[in-house]
Image 1 (cartoon, rainbow, N blue to C red):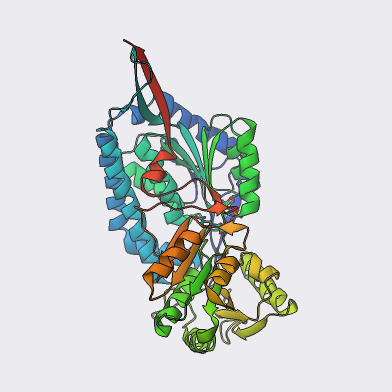
Image 2 (tube, rainbow, N blue to C red; image 1 turned 180 degrees about the horizontal axis):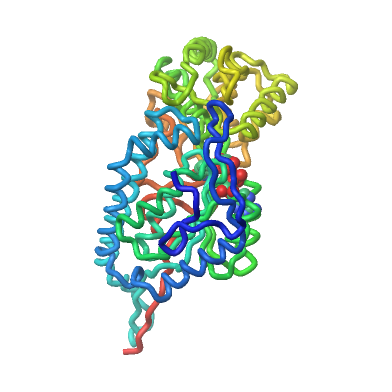
Length: 481
Ligand code: NAD
């Protein structure tokens, strides 16, 4: 396990001389320490990234040459799937099969953007027809420069890949600031970069607390673009910092996503997707469908089956076979979720299932899958992101009511609808005010498809070609003929 910062191609200690504890959420014990990075470390990393961008070979390479290195990074990650997944389990708490998915997706993300980097070689500029025939004009795309990437703790290696892979494909250099809660796998990117032959300074990883390392990165004049995934309050600070010297900014923020289930939905399928939509990754998923709306005529049936299934969920250590729900990521998140559960009860909602730490799992941050019913529309638990295994369920009466309740949120990251009537499902899908919509499912995520939110869930899109565009500038070249 790495413990130092990765700057300018090597692991070096932090200028602060201080360390951050890394905690295993299954028992609350410190099992490792990493550098507590500060403004001086960030300055070093940004200068290395700047020099690599301005004077290094990376952005001058062809897309095909960059693709070869990105592909190698993906291959190395694939070769290390089990080991990296186990590191993720120990740091985040998620069950091993889910961690394996994450790491496989991470490798896939590098392979996908390798292909897009190659395609950039075919892009000779888009011809722009002009109203004045004596001039001709083309639009060409170029890397934006040094990207500062700040990520959360729920998918530590994957969230980094969503930013690092497209940025590198575009020809940018990167300073990555992982979450202080889960820095372990992000630090492995240094080794992976070295082994893949990424030129030094192109990718730098600085660990540290948000105010100590994140903020200096957002404030640094050497950064051209900020890419952030995390909470709305931090996103707001990052946008304010970006405004000071007009840095490009993309934000992937929180959500309180609805799942609407019409009366013609198969009950078992509905229960399966409700469960996956909120209990996958312990509900620590930005797009989790944490508000479930069920047609009144099937409400009782679905709820009864949902409670039965939720009570069957095996809770335990992420490495234990058959476990579906691991420990919450850390004490602070655990306390926040417990406070939200208490608040829901104070607000008059009915705690229909769960809400406690399971017996025998008092060590570590374990919580039962939790279901609230009779949730008032104006309650905090209905409106705000809990970011844990807590779902709020309400009935609805007709399509219009379902859409109204679903859209009544300051967030707009994701939304899902289930119905046997595909025409209706698609009509509702169009009516949702959300950037990601699932029909007859919840949560499947593809590297090829755009990811991002409406309203306070963010600005811009990651993944797919949209993710690459985040790291490209567009230049017009106009010639007088
Ligand atoms: P957070 O906002 O607390 O922290 C995210 C990152 O920002 C961390 O690396 C943190 O150190 C850093 N940070 C904190 N203060 C900072 C500052 N002042 N300046 C710069 N950086 C700072 O979020 P979190 O608790 O780690 O993650 C949970 C949140 O992330 C949830 O709201 C969730 O919905 C969101 N999220 C969104 C997506 C998405 O794609 N939309 C994906 C995953 C998580």
